Length: 257
Image 1 (cartoon, rainbow, N blue to C red):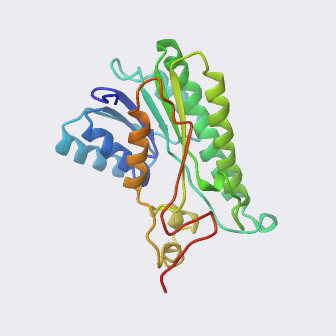
Image 2: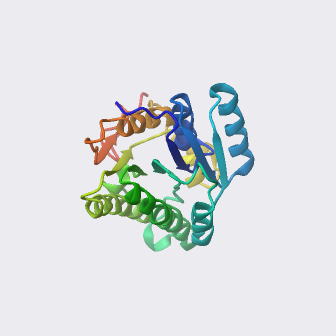
Image 3: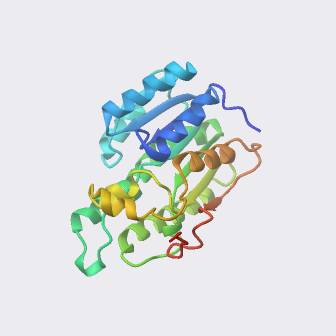
């Protein structure tokens, strides 16, 4: 198993959910964390808690991954001692709505495409060259079961996650001959703020998504990511699908009455 002690790990969308869970598990392993998110106050609170609990070094980026210029500037201007990123976790992502395609909200489409695809591409474009130069590193892309199975109302969101899957496969092929690894983590139902964001803050509607079943948690996904990045250097877990026991496909779930 690879030690993460003093390895530099950049996590996007780190202020909550899977990103925050990743920050916690990696802090416990002694890694140096670069945490990026739009919600600055929540990011600062998380960093303060992790420093107090684990005594780790943390560098914060107030960053919207959709802004290419901001991403380029942030990576190019990392302080000495922080620029040699060992692991990139492209976690920032979201879904908007469950409308039929022909009734969809175009602004919601653009938000999903710009965050889930463009943001992931921007971070990869500016971080991966350093990994190639150093001939080591690991990129973890957060996909979804939605990238494998399209479901009613999922249209554009499913398309963005299918794109993440294709980008991960293509990047792995492009990196052949280097020791840089690429992993796509594709969860099913995870109870985070995902559904609340999808339904624009409608808590009653988002709560119904998880009623009667036991979904995955952000900690569950972070634990799987931790496993993938700590394998022996010659081992690459290309793609990993995980779902709760109460879920058998993107649309087939078991709910207790």
